Length: 301
Image (cartoon, rainbow, N blue to C red; front, side, top):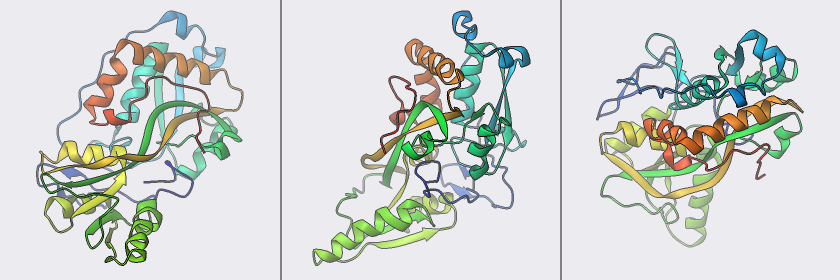
């Protein structure tokens, strides 16, 4: 959960790799994360009528310069070779294929991405950034995904996120789940005369997931794409607990008034209509956050 998802939401901490059925914890000494088998790339063709709408500067350069912060699995992180990969990357690569240009990813501190877009350093900010009304005053957004909070439980051991009183719940430290969401649920338990939730914070999300897989906690709470990917990697050991809630759109940030926003919108809507967007979300196990239409500045709060 992150500043990407809501202002102040994500702690910018390294997330260890989730590897194999036991989700063995890898060392978090670098931003390089090896998550096992590579995810297949979707082959996408250029669509001339959309590509022709690109601003002349980008047409001439033949590339989009994209500011991105890593790691944030499964959306953007580095593989074992140091290459930036992830769901966001595969979707943007598909979009730039529609546009007949290349994506150039430039690693950045998260909080510097929007100022760098305003300064013209990057063409696009792509880092699981939630499209918020506050941010829309600084940049425009093209929406591409819907993310919220999603709980997980051990397979076959049901937990109700709205009635987890007395249960052990893992979270990543300093995330909104740790600071707001689970504490609020715990306070409600206490107000009703029930035992508080035993909140177990971990420095890395992978450690929180590992605790659930091993049965050291009863549930975990995290951003919906993070939970979905953890489930996909767990070899059936964990599953969702309840629906996604507090959803908001992720968006690609571009300069205010830039025609690029509508070009990106046309490209992702093309991928939605032809089914390739759905395929990309399914490749990463994040299809529950798939959208049916991209919009410009779709903030809900």
